[in-house]
Length: 201
Ligand code: NI
Image (tube, rainbow, N blue to C red; front, side):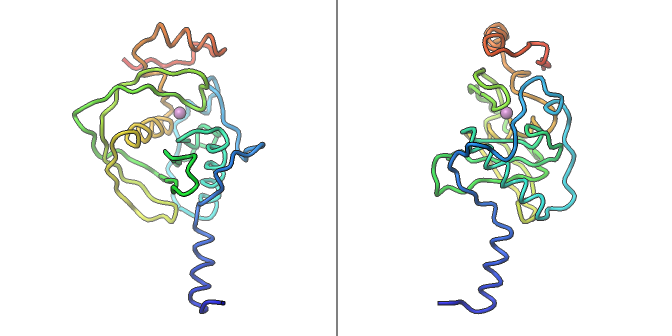
């Protein structure tokens, strides 16, 4: 049965603004994920002035590429786009969970307590290392409709948000790994040049 005009109009609007995509990995992802050594990964991204259909399309393509690579987070510089947008889905294999889109995310505050956790990155496949970061963060951002939002995150979500915001600033997790010796061995094993690490001490 057809709904009222208002309902149909709302449905059409939702379709336009929804960033939901299939989580099935694609043989050919819409966006290519760049690897350590590519300049785009070291270029700070620019703020997004207007959240429009092109930004939502970008978010959908980023999600499709992230799911195809079986990742939980992806930032636009990783696909060569210098815009401050990132996508996160901690439950990337659960078709029912909803992904997050963070546009112009800013860290407002971080907890004094810190955690150590082993990180990896879709741009540095096969390389993992312990990174110390604040346990929880408070952020502000715009969602995929352009609405200003705030969020408190802890656990893996806080970890992932900080890793992805670093990407927007041209910073990679390998810059923050404590065990340099092990990191350099892993990089070499995976065919990456250690000159692409910018140590943060
Ligand atoms: Ni990463």
